[in-house]
Length: 271
Image 1 (tube, helix red, strand yellow):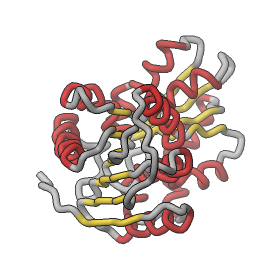
Image 2: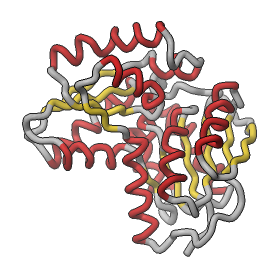
Image 3: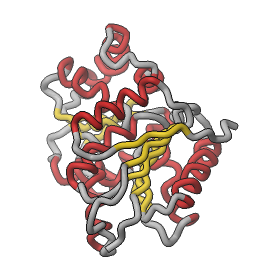
Image 4: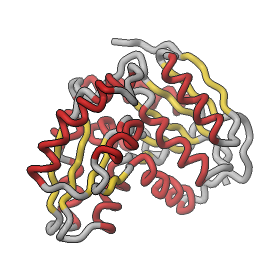
């Protein structure tokens, strides 16, 4: 048993979409979340910059005494997961990409046509297609970068005409030309517009990595006998810029769960 908290981080508020699933499946676990809202989005930044930011955040989480780090960010997972695993060999590092790729592999057939939508960095890495094709070369995979989604979501345009127009700009032709029937929301911000995407494209099955990652977290805790035996203390949510939208999302999580929640602003070097 291990009552230390689980560390979770993202480039902003998107990683919060994984938190309700973690709380629901693992209610005895305590979470420390860090959202780098002051420096978001990561998806259009250089890989070296993303790696430097990730090192800073991981260092903070380790100093806070976490037993595991969950990378609730596709951009960081695609570029930094292996690096962070080397940096902290004694702490399990769980990326968000492998669980979602495994879901595609296990639930799709050769008849399915899978669309991956994410940030520029994630799509340029090609990691989703690589992971899927390494196990199922018969599945057709198509990728599309949607860089405007994250800044719009972070600015509070989740349910707006602007967002609908932006979704159509990126996805109408992509879905039609590639005959997409299954779509992976390869950015943890994207589930925040998932209901709009479902409404606009009702025939497409959505795979949400923010939900799939919990299976990997649970599996590692079981394998290493690291489950907490009781929930001691509050879940704490840090942000490098405690924005109105970040606070609103935490309030929403608080209303929809029985978990105790505390949130704090944490200044971080913005270079």
